[in-house]
Image 1 (cartoon, rainbow, N blue to C red):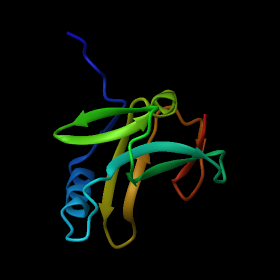
Image 2 (cartoon, rainbow, N blue to C red):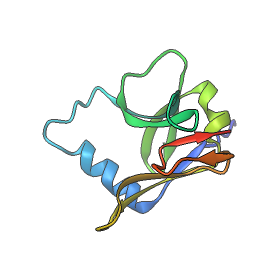
Image 3 (cartoon, rainbow, N blue to C red):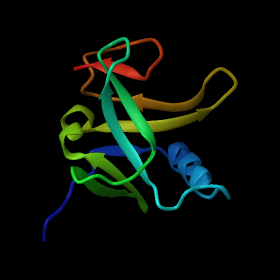
Length: 113
């Protein structure tokens, strides 16, 4: 039996917020949660977290009952990353703790490897 290692994990706060977004009345249930990277940003690469259609190069992963998709080639940049959601007065939104990032910018959504 093959074990697929989930490249990223989600904190309870992130899981709650994603599930809240997915339970919204106007949520498009045909879309999947996408985690990934794209070129750009002040440090070279930016994180992607949103809802999208599954592509032919995507793998499907499960984390504590939550399914998400990721392009196969992105796992080398994101392996071991933890996604959190903060709902405080000073910081609100998703944050990314990536052990592979050699540097990141002040906005927290861009990094270099």
